[in-house]
Image (cartoon, rainbow, N blue to C red; front, side, top):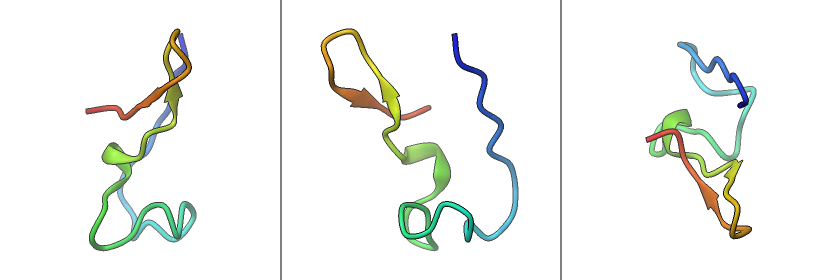
Length: 41
C-alpha cells in the first residue's frame, strides 16, 4: 500500500504532468501487477 497526499495548490510541483487542464487525481503513477499504470480515480 502506498499513501499519497495530493491536496490543493496550483499543481506547479507536478508540472507538466499536472496543470490547469489535467488535475493530479488523473495522473497515472500507481503501478499495477500487470505493469500498466492507473490513476487515483
